[in-house]
Length: 387
Image (cartoon, rainbow, N blue to C red):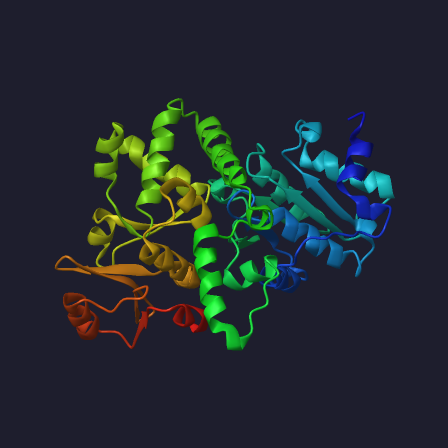
């Protein structure tokens, strides 16, 4: 506790001067934070490691500090070695002490990288129930959402931060394409499919950055946290996941290829999902069919996927991007008589064909399938205009 006062000042430069940052705003997420500012709910920002959660938080704090007294804003990164043995309550108490803040004064608390803090849910609940605070939490793992005791039930709003979409990508690259230069938009889109949307990588272009990111997730967020000793099988499993992005995945087959048990394969699959490196959708159908059928999987970021597999199979990459347009609608995939259609949700059927037409059997199933709305996305302009 000896240097805590100094550490908190280091975390919170806005206490002493106007806060300036050259971070690039991501308006679609900042707007959600603005609308949640007046509510009591604990806001939890989740998503892939280094996807930009901390940057969005810092940008929001910059805005917030112009509307309220900056000395009522506390930010701490809970994975910092300097404060690893200090409870959240002790941090808030010291914060009040520094600025002589009374208990009835509303505080804005930002806890970054909170997922692996022991008893974090219990501490957050206590702050929520007993103090006049607005709490924001970020986590690079779904661990904090697995609230087994229901401590935060009804007290949270979850915001998942995703990699850059195409419009954010061109903003980060400072590209301004004219309508008369639509051919350039298509070229930039292909670059986007190759590079993905991890903000720092887009700004620096350093491939080693993505390598280090994947290693950090595998070693720290999965192997260390879950006690996995066989790192080589974990890495091989991840490689196979990237190979199957946009396709069905059989855990039985992947377990045979890697030489691990099916149960271990299921656990690995859950680990990679919990760190937001992959997403999965079920086959459409009755409950037993959904549970037994292979899931289709999608990579969180195409830059990471291409790092592992090389830049190929653009049809799968394009489908992966379309998935993120409809992810929140909980789509499933259609599979009948060995014929697959990509997505079905809210009585809407969606098939993705990058630069191609439907094959005869697919076309027959597509036309005969009962749905109020049917869409074929085969060109970049279809993707950009899709609602």
